Image (tube, rainbow, N blue to C red; front, side, top):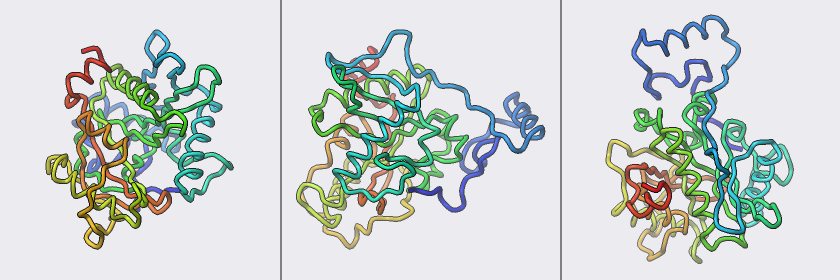
Length: 303
């Protein structure tokens, strides 16, 4: 199970320390109120404002699937079982979990969980989890902070969500499920006036028949030349994949999810980190609503 970086960000009523999260100017109502709460009680963490997780009408994907946000623990457990099936059963991840057959980590309790279900069986066949800015303040970190130094993103955090644990059932990877997930995510961002998404996009150590990380090194070389974020947003891995010792000259395509993100206008923030639990190379990626190509903006937002 992942642990927070050392030192961890403080878990407090005031959120992350100023070096990592921009604070409102002194004397503003937000600061005065937060200071009063902190002085009154140092031991409890107030509930974060609720995100608007569904529009008035029920969300739905194409015929045969439904899209919804987890409302109960049973919904979250169904997503965690799918994640375990994919990450452990298919990818061979070695995870420590408090509940057998479930992928559970310390961020799950702070996240919103998006689910796609087979309408006929009710089975969860696709999922994302979403960590909002308010909840990131409560936990004191994002998952991506455990793999990368994200200090340069501090000015984005107030309107930035983290996407993670994306997976789709093996029998439903024709594209419809992931598009349904993306559509619901776009609506979530729009309703909550959020504009930036980050996350770790994984490349298996064995990808397209290439083993030992050479594929990841080659994909990083390609994307660093074509899709690298501006310098002010570039980040450093905490446990870098040793790309300089790997063959980075291979002609290999990125995984489908990364290709999808790139089509949506995403940028790579820096070199990959090695995730020993999942045995993957993780690329830090950032996507902004303003960078969505017009055709996707119309498809997802109707704008």
